[in-house]
Image 1 (cartoon, one colour):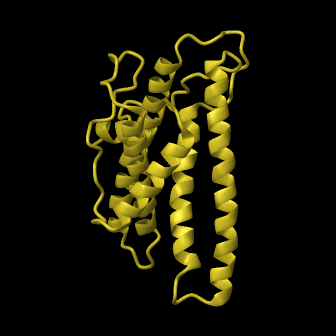
Image 2 (cartoon, rainbow, N blue to C red):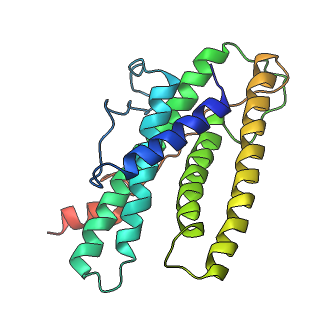
Amino acid sequence: MLNALEIARLHDNATVRWHHESSAPVQPSFNPPDTRPTAPNPPSASLLDLALAHHRANFDLWHEEDKAREPGASDARIAAVKRAIDALNQTRNDLVEAMDRALLAAAGTQDPDAPLHSESPGLILDRLSILALKLYHTAEEAHRASASDAHRERNLARLDLLREQRSDLAECLDQLWCQTLAGKRRFKLYRQLKMYNDPDLNPAIYTHKSNP
């Protein structure tokens, strides 16, 4: 079910395609499942569907964060971008948990005596998604005609490092999955429990509501 190389290719192909399409954020083709402990079982979605929707959230996050760094951006512009970033981060984290739920279901009963891995596969997939974006944008800088030779050479070197990091991380993910299926290692769903978007947990929201 889990093939890190296949997902890395999915990330790369989607990154290129989305950069050639409209720059407007695109919502996932399905609503991210409710990951609260009391929520019903999430709707069925393949791991690749979840990985693609998750990568889109990271893609949109990358470009929203760039907007906040634009020189001369107004306070209103930055505030709007910040709200968009918060919403996208929530989607990103919900989808990381959804990927882990799908993988836990696929793995079946794990050996409780197997060593526990500190990082879940979903969190590793999140890192692979970000590396795909770094690779794309670093390659842009390495071949930017308006840049100096020194700038291009520096980014070519960075590109080699990023490729090595992604290769290592993908191999680690595949090993974790194989070891889990063999009963030699186990992983858990680590819920992110984000507070900033919850009106009952963020004092900046509930204090404002009680004191209009």
